[in-house]
Amino acid sequence: MNENPHARAQHLLAESAVEGLGKADEAWLREHLAGCVDCAREAVTATELLHALRSAPVSVPRDLAARTQLRVRLRAHEVSKAASGSLLLWLVTAASWLLGVFSAPLVWKVFSWMGSIVGVPKLVLEVGFVLWWTVPALVAVAVVLQQRALNAGAKGI
Ligand SMILES: [Zn+2]
Image 1 (tube, helix red, strand yellow):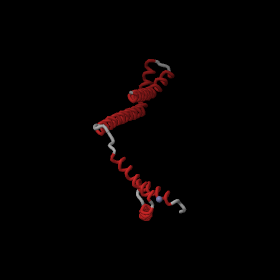
Image 2: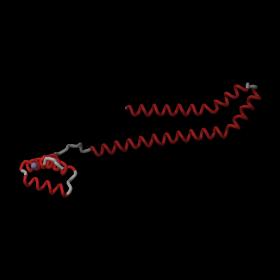
Image 3: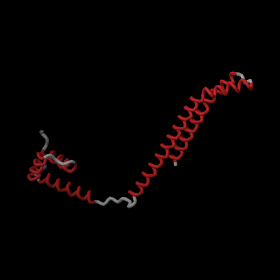
């Protein structure tokens, strides 16, 4: 290493303040500081500056920790409420789909029975049957969109 020994000493001084030095570097620095007045003065100044910085009082509001804990608890409560709300929505949606699948043959029989009694055209029966399937899904989509809008509104406050 062809580095200027004074520059190396400054570099090692900075490094020792941050992360410490290896034994070889520390020995080299100690030896250099013993023989170099300028670098020794820099080292003393840096040490005093660091000491002054570390002892400077940092003012933090006394209730900062309590306020932070309260904020974290409120946020956790909000998140758990939202999660349980969406879980409920998923359960209701799944139940709706299962009910729709298992009741489809029965519903079709009811529709065709009503069609034969009332004399409703087959097209109207088919449209009614399709609506039987799509209306719950559309309601679920509307609920999800409304919930998102409410959550977005709550975050905006
Ligand atoms: Zn030096």
